[in-house]
Length: 174
Image (cartoon, rainbow, N blue to C red; front, side, top):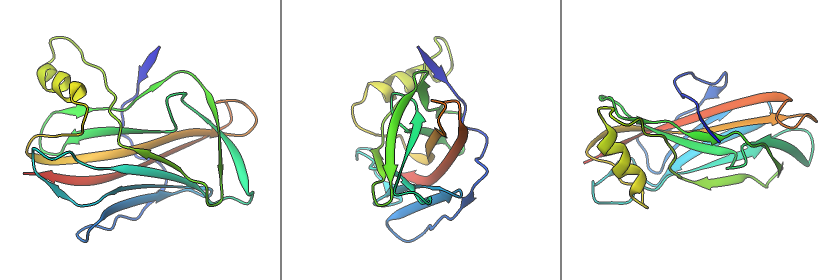
């Protein structure tokens, strides 16, 4: 079973973007975790495979801690056209998995596609082509790529304290 969750809201965390200089990087922090999204550059050509990755690190008091998140992974990605109406939200499955994260042992995830298509929607052809492409290509324009880490801490398997971190990059495709 898959659930789709819109990524329109921002996480209650502090963002520290560093734009202009390459590589491109943005990060958000909460008291225990940092989510960083990076790309080797801000501008790509339409025929190039875009490279993006995200990393979740733990900054808490323990050497390691247990977190719970989707069985499909702790970090998901969404893609949104900045001046358009095309948007692929991250989809997270409803399963709950246990992960260990520690000081100096981050969880790193390269960009991975997810999304759902509603038959008959105006951008159906774009979404089908985007999801079918094994690489990360986008048409010309400005795009917001967001990494999303939704996790739970505490002893209650996906029922403890929720951490919702989102960090985004603006990428231009020419």
